[in-house]
Image 1 (cartoon, one colour):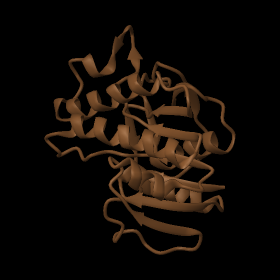
Image 2 (image 1 turned 90 degrees about the horizontal axis):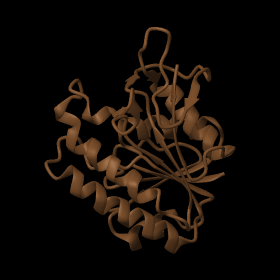
Image 3 (image 1 turned 45 degrees about the vertical axis):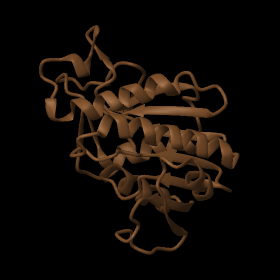
Amino acid sequence: MKIALIGATGRVGQAILAEALHRGHQVTAIARNVDAIEAKAHLKTVGADVADADETARAVKGSDAVISAFNPGWGNPNIRADYARGLAGIVAGVKKAGVNRILFVGGAGSPIDNGERIIDSPSFNPQFKEGALGALDALGTIRKETDLEWSFISPARVIKPGERTGTYRHGGDEPVKDDTGESTISMGDLAHAILDEIEKPKHVHRRFTVGY
């Protein structure tokens, strides 16, 4: 497939890029600064401000699918507002380019755990609150989207360093937990799940999550 990857230089984006290339896809890696992306076969890099719909459209045009791992940066004091700006540019740009399939990588704070949003839990790290609210806003916006074949993945609460095993479980609006009550996934398996959904969609117009 021809896959456009937005946010390719981020931690999750790098794992997605590695998995997509491992599977033999042609990838267009999109980021504001692409200098840090190592040149590889089947990889094209495009510098773009995805908040600009025209720049996004030019970057993703001709793709079979788009994966958005967009994040304005956890240290960004305007992360929530910039998340909304970025999302608007991505959605408008993808539509303008005529690409129908898109998967959004969201945050782990929006799922419901024991009847309440994880983001509202006293144990939720306040350092990530504004970014998590931005991802939650994005989910609400995307759920109203009818023109795109979208999916939205919320990772497990803890994303561990680690390789792909291909062995994990899927959930919906609640986190997947192991026998000890922990919600975890390796970075490699998160990327594995994302590419599986792109290749064989099972969660179109739905949010899903993964964990062990």
